Structures are given as C-alpha cells and as structure tokens.
Length: 451
Image (cartoon, rainbow, N blue to C red; front, side):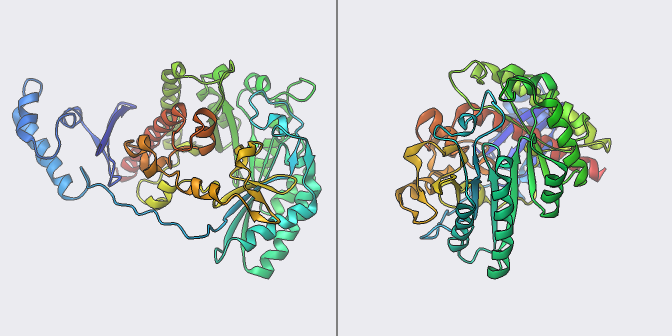
C-alpha cells in the first residue's frame, strides 16, 4: 500500500504513505487513484471515460505524474533501520506514589487503586531511590521525566513534595533536567497545593469525563456520591491559575456515552483549552467498546473534527490531543516506528520500588522487571519490548498509519491477545479515524493560512 485516500468533512484527501505528503483533490483524481498505479494511464482512461471527459483525465494524470516526479506520490518504500543501544537508556519513570484512591471509578484498570494487590503509599526513601535510579541509568541523556501517579497521588503529597525537592537537588548535582507531571482526579486539590504545583512547574493531567451525568456515572466517590461538582471547580481553578497552559483535562468515554463528542465540547464550553478524551479499554463488561460501536464512534470523531475546525478558524479554538499532528516535521520516523519505550526506556515504579514496563502493566506479575535497588533482573523482557515495534508486527507492516501510531499500546495487546505483536483491533480502528480527522484539520488549516 502506497497511498491512503479518504473522504471527510466534504473533502477528498489522499495521503502518500511513504513521503507523508497530503493532497486535497477533486472527485476525478480521487476516482483515478482507485486504478492508477503510476504507469497504467491507458487503463485509467479506458475505465473512466464513461464518467469523465478524456481531456480531463489526461490533464489529471499529467499532474499526478508531476507529483510522482517530485516524490510526493507513490514515493518508494522507506528503509528505516531500527538500531538500539546494547543497554537501554532510561528516560522516564512513572512513580506510583499511592496505591490507593478516593474514587471508585467503574472502568479503573488499577483495581480502584491497589492494582490487584495491597493498598499502600510510597515512602520518601523509595522516591529518592527512584530518582537516583533514573539518573544512574539515563547515561548522557540530559532530559528525564517523572510522573507522579496512582491511585491518587495527592493522597501522598508529603512524598511528592519530598521527591520534588530531591529532584531539584540532584538536578544541580548532575546537570540533569527533569520534566515533572502529576496525574490527579482533582478532588484533593487545595489552594496551597495548586500554588505549590504551579511554583514547581509541574504539569498536570486532570481527570474529567465531560458532562456531569457522564462523569458521575463512572467516577463516583467511595460512598457512591458524585464527584463532578468539586472536580470541575478545582479544574477551573487550576486552568485559570496557569493561564490555561501546562495541563490536560483528560476524560474517558465508554459504551455508556458513545456521543462522546458532546463531552469534549462540554469541557471546551466550560472554558478549558487543553483536552484529551480516550476510549475505555475493557472486555467482558457492559461499558466496554465493541466492533458494533465503531460506526457511531467514527461519526462522533468526524463531528468533533468539524466543530474543532470551525472553532479554530473562528479564533475560539481549543487543543484536542488526538488532533495534534505536524504534517511537516514531527518526530523522526524511526522514533515513531519504535514506540513509547515501555519496558526499556520507560518504567513504572510501585510503592515498594518494583519495576514494571509501564503503569498499565503494574500488577501483572509476569511482567515484573526487577526493582530500583537491584535494577532490571528479568533482562529478557526489555529485549522483548524493544523488538515489539511496528516493523515486527505483521498487521502493522501493512497498515497505512504505520508511520504515525507506533504500533498501538503494548498493554492493550497483552490484555486482549497475550501477545505484544498483535495489536488491539478496536484501538487500531479508532486511532486510524483520529488520524484521518487530524490530517483533514491540518490540511484545511494550511490551505486557509495560504489563502
């Protein structure tokens, strides 16, 4: 497959897969590309003369040949060598500072915070050792990342504060630079904590599922009461306090709210400019997404893309994570093919100091890698994860989106297929639809800026 073509928002769009070039075309060219392979002009004319004039077909074919000469159509297959260092360099840790939570979210992959094991809080000493672990294993890499995670990390704010102070001390000693993030359900945010997080330039991921009834159905408190009213209040306070920057409001949609575009727009209408809404990943439960839901979910993404574009062009736009796509630059192809780094560049750390490939693998005991004191003991697992890249996944190798998606989530592949090389199909389909929407948006914005 060398091109991918699709129709969305009344536009005919062609993506040249290997070059990344995007072309907005008319219906004539769109139909030609069902037949044209770069050398069969006569076949195209013969097949389409009943629908189009021969002169128009000839002119369009000439233009397509010019695009080929410029390397923007039917570009040759990319040869992308994926080489890895003998020893992986750790770039990021997810610190599970609290295996406990003050919500009881219906779709929680963490078992309401305990990840299928006991509840507990990370000690200051384990937090310090985690910082030393990443410094010791990041080699010459200067920029490192820490994400304070849970459960609910604000249940252990004392350790968070201590680790932040320790990070700043170690930065000065080692010339490392740490990007810090904290993921929270926002219930425990106070004026003091918000100020602290702002003062220490800690990025925030705030959990909100959109409309009040949608949020409260899946994100109740321990006593069963709704959490929306307090969460929205604190989220608004956070966004205002940092100029609507350096945060994401992140939601999850399920089979209960297939009309999730309304939830995204609800959050935008509340004044939030940094949004991300993700599909739930679950099986054998009534809120799980299934193949029969896909047509409606595709429709919702297209509705959302059209409204996103409308607002953006009117100067009243918001940022939606899955519509962020740089058609011109972006990460290098090798990086996009190799994936997120889980299991070899990115680890999760439990309150006890155990290492797992990422936060979603925590509690799956067969994926325990080692600990922050002794390092990676299961040395086969990092190799397994490094080799689970797009070029080693048969389905991914043939997919038009292979240079954009990194092969999907390893944890989801394991959950559904117990095989890192077999992606979760519904996740793939949704990712491809989001990419089509993002390509349409960026192409339309580029055209508008030139006119």
